[in-house]
Length: 157
Image (cartoon, rainbow, N blue to C red; front, side, top):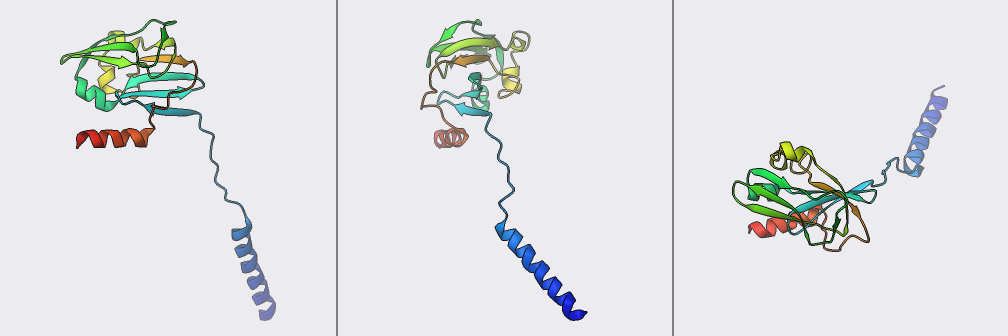
């Protein structure tokens, strides 16, 4: 009996080792449904299904100060990459926000009319400015999170 048990145990252990080596990794990588890009002028742009949501980064809102008014574009307005699309008035100054892509404005954050301070309190969430339907390719000047973080680090030195 002991010999039979030992053989079964050894075979079971060998089978387990074989399965560990032979089975494919059980990791599932979901397709990327959206991508967030950043500009050198401190805007963020989250693209999902050809429509991008535009806002300013936390760094930009900190530099601007308390936002008291947001002059938003009109829906249907065509925009060109690099052109001023939004003006943000703060206690300190007026800041311009530039379109990161060519496209058409398909939505604006109406909540900023009553509560422009959302740009400060939730710069990269509820403080978004407008949505742009992208026409053409995304400019190569857009940065990913790592490149933007590097830009911030270099500018602080």
